[in-house]
Length: 542
Figure 1: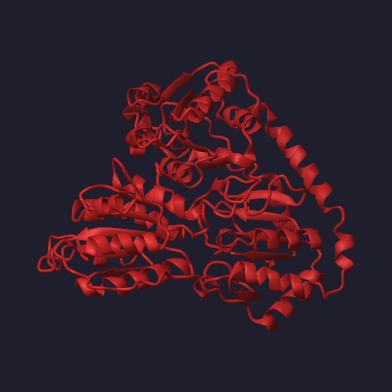
Figure 2: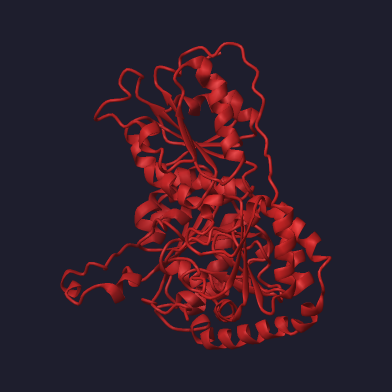
């Protein structure tokens, strides 16, 4: 068996459902022959974003795979790999490589060498018979420990080599639990805390620890906030839900973190980023994470738990059952307090959320969309900048993995690929990306991929003919050069590609347009709704 055929067989054995790629790479053809669905994109970065979402929506059980050609294909893919690395997403990247005699000298792009700092591991297949062990190592890394891209580079002259007879045993997931003594000590701290807050990250998703998190919060009446990556780990219509923290946050997040005496971070990195919630100083920090390199890196922690989030929360719930319950009664009014703060905060924002102005308020579109869709059967994501800051505080996610959040590297154009990958992973769901006219300039051509590959997503575009988020920081002299001005008729572009496209200028047409777009996706047609919006600069910060 040749290397190409063996790779396809190994991917099938590992349960890979989709190969997303950009030609030319022999793995694409081999996978198609092996009855793995192959999807060809218009550019490498969007394909990596799709593979990213495939992995995320299965909590890493189904591994997203992206393949590309050597040289320029691998070079173009760099940004997408870097984004997945920043967000700790497990995905398999398999570039072709230059022939072994050419792979190690200038100017040839060696993926193994050049991507080793943005991957969890990077390894070339140096000979055909080494393939099974290389792939075994790759999938073990993908399924265990902190998530991240894993790269396997296959030189062009290795594809044709024989692997020989081999038996491949698929990888599995091994979990580690926290120190029992530390669990006991931390249980005492949480049980006696007067105003504790839980901060949940995406480690809760990958561990599928949603029930254990809910048990902890409900039993001990502890309010919960999440990172953008962790959003939907706790139902946001729950009385103890504060909302998610990013650059823009609900008031309840701000108030409860400010007044907390103990902050319990579970499945999070506490990474300092301009696009994440900032932890207030002077608090007792409990940091529970899978990866020790996160500890005391950005936020000093007085207490730590190392291990899988599900095992950690289960152990903590057991230990807490033996603790005095005095503080539970003292926190009986927490849910009502959260509701009161939310009501007052929403009242302040209701003029924007219900504005009947033209140009249209982007907040009005988000508000109407929220009322219209079934949150249990919707997966939504956003792009960088204004769409992220406008959507994340007001969107309530009620089902785990119904929101794909991100907020570190924040590459423009990320959301389209995430929505397309989400639709592959959850074909029954309404999958939505919300983006702006700057983001569509980066990856908009791949709306054609959604049409060609029959991936019926709903793409909501806010077009204000400018990079509005940049306006407050640009010098006055830019008025002469119009450096933030951009333009386009993107609904017409969508129609030209064969999708459903509609431009909306009248606020009274928002709901009807959303309904038409959703109906188009239900009929199997990708839809792009272009709302002509004002240059909205206000976001919910404190």
